[in-house]
Amino acid sequence: MTETYKALLGVRDDSGYRVEFQQLSSEQLGDGDVEVAVEYSTVNYKDGLAMSDAIPIVQKPSLILGIDMAGTVVKSESSRFQVGDKVLMNGYGASETHNGGYTERLRISSDYLLKVPEAFTTRHAMLLGTAGYTAMLSLLRLEQLGISSESGEVLVTGASGGVGSVSIMLLAGLGYTVAASTGRLEESDYLKSLGANSVIDRRELSEAGEMMQAPRWAAAVDSCGSHTLANVIAQLHYNGAVAACGLAQGLDLPGNMMPFALRNVALLGVDSVHAPMALRERAWQRLAESVDLNKLEAMAVEIDFDNLPDAAGQILQGKIRGRAVVNIAAR
Ligand SMILES: NC(=O)c1ccc[n+]([C@@H]2O[C@H](COP(=O)([O-])OP(=O)(O)OC[C@H]3O[C@@H](n4cnc5c(N)ncnc54)[C@H](OP(=O)(O)O)[C@@H]3O)[C@@H](O)[C@H]2O)c1
Image (cartoon, rainbow, N blue to C red; front, side, top):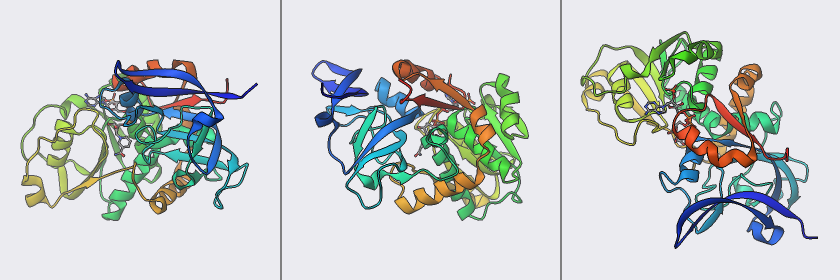
């Protein structure tokens, strides 16, 4: 009997958009010089968007969803990877223009793959996933500008989410004084266990604010956008910087020029999807050196492969705390 592999696909046709499980044969796995037995994947905010089509992510009539995966190479025509290698993939257009990680078997171009750092298992790699890797890209952006633990207090918004939780852990591990902004004040103990020194109510930041506000933060990692980002910019110290990586509150940026012209602040973009390979390798190496594996496990929520479609609404409604990991191989 022909072997088939379970996968979760986004399908767009004349009847609209739907998400469905399919059993794919080897011939249906598409092109690529490497085949991976997927062990773990994750649920990121963008996976929620892709599964719900709240913002259209899937750009082909039919694609395997999931922007992340980690697993073991089972076939390789690439000189970079051997059978048995542990590999991971983040973004690079997965579930947008080519197949992603919600599948038992992925055939993919080796251009999109990295080796899992030795310090990590495939589960660790997916506990971090795109959210954790983006938290590290945000930290690297701040460091590029000379921000350090000596600079002053750093704010993390969307603190209970994936990017937020990992950012707190990383910054606190490096000795930063970290303030966490959250809509879930009941998670204050959780945020402090990751290393936050203080917790603020996100409502302090989520409404339209003054053009210039009392300086509070040397730097910030913002995964919310909209008024939150505008207020964070207005509250940065002289020479402060914010790494702006997300849009959980909104796509808009209703701010003004004053903090840039009068406080020399910097607004730093962060893109995980098309980040070049050298930067990805650097980010994952730094993660391997910096992550506290106990804290990483403490932020984990397990999602069953079968229940993935339900997780879309949960993450878009801000109901998932920390990082959601999907054990694909457990079936
Ligand atoms: N630039 C990139 O390459 C890149 C990469 C990864 C992620 N992202 C973006 O970063 C954001 C976070 O991703 P994630 O995977 O960490 O998502 P997540 O786990 O859902 O975290 C987002 C957090 O934002 C907060 N939040 C939700 N709705 C909000 C609202 N209306 N106003 C203010 N805060 C709100 C919530 O934290 P609290 O409950 O603590 O308030 C939520 O947990 C998303 O927008 C995602 O698309 C971008």
